[in-house]
Picture 1 (tube, one colour):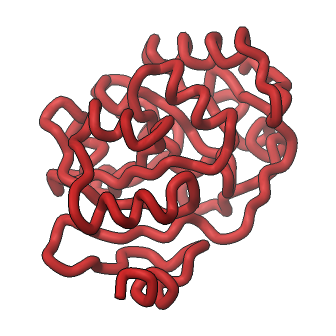
Picture 2: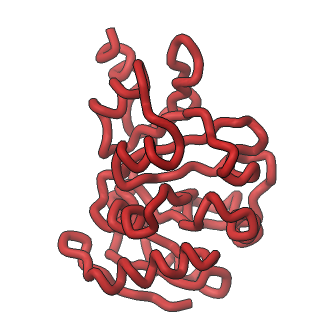
Length: 209
């Protein structure tokens, strides 16, 4: 595994370009996010997604979340956000709120676990957004761990547990950690909490009212 140290405030362009090149080439890259470290592949390449499941030992009936550079990238690669979804994105992106939206047919069915929907968010982390921007599309950001083991904010733990399974680790030091993103389904008439997380569901409901 290639480990590259990157300044989280002023990321080196060559490191971002290299990470994007590996990802778009079908490889698995461990990257930092605003919560924990995640594993990035191109969700539009089925072979890359299948490799991601193999790396994690993840059950095939579990969907994989995505991150994007900004709302415009979500609109271009998935679908424009409207109504409630657009309001939530405007309020909480960048940040730890994942929105469940309809998935285009081009996204690997492994990503959606056959549901026809996909979770996506814009992280509050310059490096994660820069990599997605360089890739030109949203990328996966499932936690950088073997399924059943704890997720981690520590790049050393990522290397210890996945160093022989992934091609590259973008190391910006420890991430903030804490709770994972809150997941809200906005494909239904009323928003539905899928997973409690960093943003309290009560806060989201109160803001929508």
